[in-house]
Amino acid sequence: MAFGRSSRKKTPVEPVTLKILVAGGFGVGKTTLVGAVSEIRPLRTEEVLTEAGRPVDDLHGVEAKTTTTVAMDFGRITLREDLVLYLFGTPGQDRFWFLWDELAQGALGAVVLADTRRLEDSFAAIDYFERRGIPFTVAVNCFEGARRYPVETVRAALDLDPEVELVLCDARDRESVKSVLVAVVEHALVLADRAHASAAT
Image (cartoon, rainbow, N blue to C red):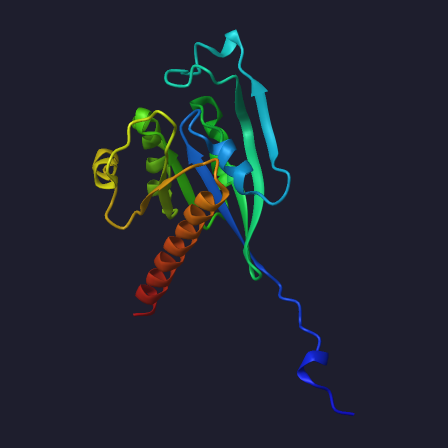
């Protein structure tokens, strides 16, 4: 008995899963970014900011912020049928930095989310990934009311290496965030291919 193409069962594709970190300063929009793009209900570990935390939590520029991530945010997005990203949002305050090493294990790459009103808050995350050789892309979160700067001006202010990509984004917008994640994956894979090629020679 002959079977046409339409009668053949399509073999299900086993997707590749990749781990991406979302890092940056306190109140820069990491929780918003993960929530905007995740296809599952994001896991969040937010707690209400209290008076007791004021001496250690710098609210300059984010005075309206009432909650903070104390462990991580977690979300998932399917970029293609064969590619799924697991997103891990890191806590922004210095007192939770001990969690970063655990979260960074097995990560393909990272997004460093930046706010042009507080660019200095991005330096710690950039230094962290540079020291550990984890590929990262800087995404400038374009907050309403914040002054817009040319990409090259922001790049110079952050003193980024030439191969580090810098993009503009809206952490509230799903398509904008997807573009950032695609940039991270592509950047990390290019660096991995380059490393393999160097090792082979």
